[in-house]
Image 1 (spheres, helix red, strand yellow):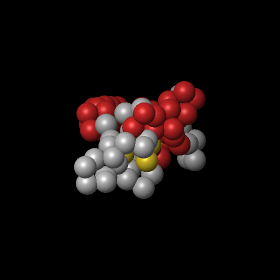
Image 2: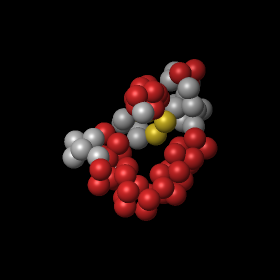
Image 3: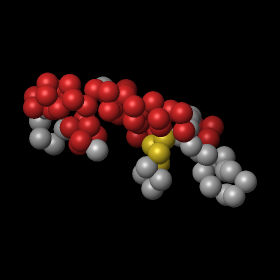
Length: 76
């Protein structure tokens, strides 16, 4: 989990609430000046979160400390 959070913090744009594909995309811009994000990757993260959400809510969340980053992230 430590590596997950390190990577997530590095690639996640808090203002746009999306992930970059990798560090090469931090400075890339679309023709209209917008940042370039990894749409497919954001979709996989969202899909994976939804797929495990019922299991996570029933099994994982109850056992996590109330201030857990994972608990906050899974709840969205």
